Image (cartoon, rainbow, N blue to C red; front, side):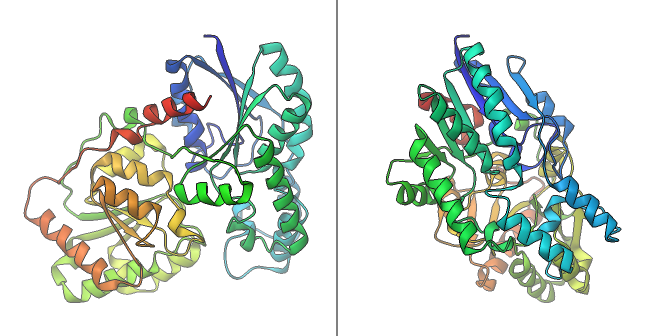
Length: 431
């Protein structure tokens, strides 16, 4: 296998969640197109979700380099404990919740304004020193950086400056200087200008700039004044080959993935509450299940409402492999984009997995946007604005009536153009 590519990524199994899926799946299929993947990733990363089952997707051809990283989160946790914080601390707690202690506010400000572009920035210099020698020894001529964390792109930037013959692909899974997370981190004007300066250097120096939605393509093209390539997320057909759709005793509307402070399912839930009051039969059969981490404010919103509490379940984060069984017993898949900044340009990875199930998808969010267009083109479902309560109720009622009248679940074939294998082929053309 002559072609070699170095993928520099913070997230790698056993890290779980959405951040790891994209380049894990690319690495899985690259060998079948004649590319040997070398993975450079932290030896001791700080991540909230662990999923050992994803290790089975690491191809035997891959060379994984675990390189030590120092992150200030450890100091934050220790200081938090000294100040009497009894709860288990997570990096996400720096930005979650509306009521913050003084320590949390100061920590959030420090995180947003002193660690530019993010707290993983201390990994950059030692990684560059190691990789300059490593790529020469291994004969690697192509590198890929993927962010967030966007400090990973600074590794690519420095490697490119020191070794201009390297071909560098910079992959943006989220925006950078225009990312909504910066608002949550209380990022000030000076820090924002530093973000913009670093971002401009990256998009200027990279040989290829890649991002995940048409909306982000336009944003980065406007920012950089150069062509930007679209490489969407997708689904791994191997994950779904044994998927069995069964009719559960409950009419289950299921949401998979994190509900963070930016994700607001409340408009959807209020539409459901209104429908419950009109349709007593639905009250007996409906179940709404949120799989994964759920923001405490939203959980409290549900628990304080007797109607919603009676039909809502919260399933803790589970290994990706086990998620397939939950897909199989669902009747409708729920996508919530309400609350996100630039939600019209958001196509999360779970949307493509929803397509793979063949189940109807109810999206709540912008009716004009990338996710809406994808659902419309694929015929998989609809995107309804959160303010259009009546339309949400009609969709649920129609799917419930169809569910009642049949012993099986209507299932459309998943679109193979969004399979990870097909998208990897597009990546190899860029390589």
